[in-house]
Image (cartoon, rainbow, N blue to C red; front, top):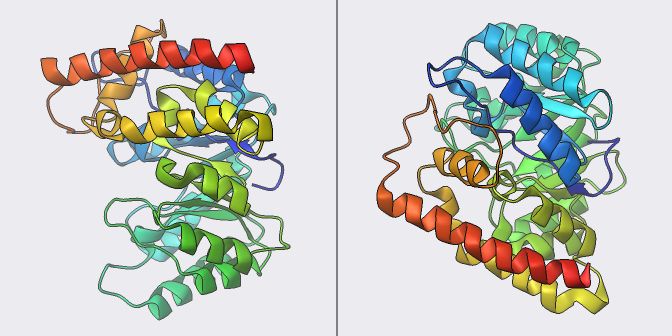
Length: 308
């Protein structure tokens, strides 16, 4: 993302009314919450937004709404490729770009089937480039329908075209991260890591920032980490913050995004826990885990205020 500084780009939640319709006033509040927390960009219409459960018109309308609320304060990227013929994907990419986004995100697992080769993927992506002339693109190694991880060589070649400005990485491998950063060095391009397990190492290696689901629980804590990861006087606190996220990774992933919406409700955000995605049961045990998580966060945030 060429206009954003190093920092946090949230994978945005989608708030719904209890009847299942998109809650646009809540989406306004949610967007403003991310901005107030210090996000340097916004990733709309992503998996956390339940993008596969939205209609094409809902995708476009919600993207336009987020772009309007952001008002140019930060750039917005959004997913533009879904199942269908490549020409249909190209047409929707252009519509998403016309909605006001800075870059349109390509889902790696939707450009080629799991059994198809990297050569097939590469050929289709180059055709997509040809059919979306002038549209800046990015990649998301989305876990659904399956996770297709790009190699450093692939990413380097794509970024060298000048058309790829953004990458949300989910490889979970710090050595692959380093290789991808080396392959894309010198270009107007940002790699944003989704994995909190090596977040500090990734930032120190040169990642542009973090784009993780944990930011839908405590966005200001991710922002703090992005701003302080290399502060020599705060390395104990930096390690403590990363360990907090590693320790609680299971709680944050269980029945997600319902748990994230419930956590935000605990913090006073006006958002329903309704989800269109079938993610499992929000049991009493899960609820108790999220409530305990908020208590631990409150203790940690008070400590960080003393050293911020």
